[in-house]
Image 1 (cartoon, rainbow, N blue to C red):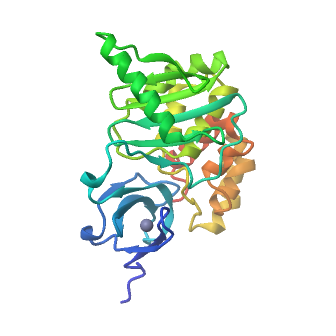
Image 2: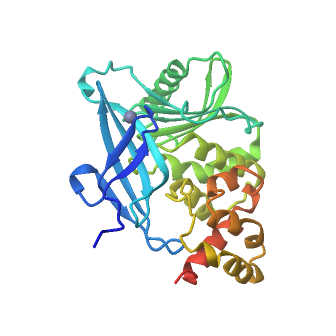
Image 3: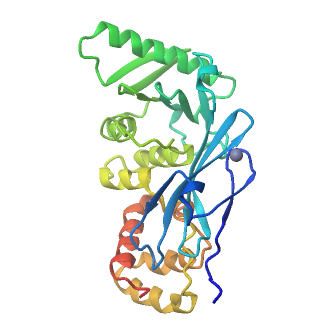
Length: 305
Ligand SMILES: [Zn+2]
């Protein structure tokens, strides 16, 4: 009998645009595999896959369904193969892979810096500034504070190139925000540790960090578990198009009796017309708790069995 499983999974490398193929059945073709609980009736798995191009190694984390079909990217980044060849002042800058952020009206500048792995996520930076130089300056001021204080504070106010930045630091990462919005600053005092203390090895996407900042501006009192979910969800960029298309109308009708938002968004999600990140970036950001409640509800009820 012919297997319906496609042996190879194909996707586009987010760093260079090359088509990458790997075999989910063959552990030699990927680095790590994370199985998820049944999600919308599908057995989704996140794989980390690497390939080499010249002197670089590109890493992609992608979500694949039980037919080995590519469902979406979680993250992607690039590393020099010979790290010793890196100049000591080197930083990787992330951010170019997604459109510039223009929704953060109250924020002049927002950077996430990893001092150990030497990368910067350029969430928002004014045109005409050299991000890597700015990072050097910020890191040197952080190191100065670390030398001066026996217990360096987690929060610092740093003036750099005419910007006053609110900086939250850990031993590895720091998040630097230029904004006069005091509600945002207070909210970030709670939220920043989720970002800078995380020991995950993935690089957060600019889009996701921008989304969190936007959410904190409109709902500074949003609960930390929701922020945590947005920051760590493998499913944000995943197409949740269900194989059970004929059951969508029925499922939407049943769920919306209990959760009205289902009427608006569950159909488009299950038909693969939209992803969670698109909903959150659009008009549904302030209703993110309703969206996650809906997803949990659909999963818990095992509506696709
Ligand atoms: Zn590549």
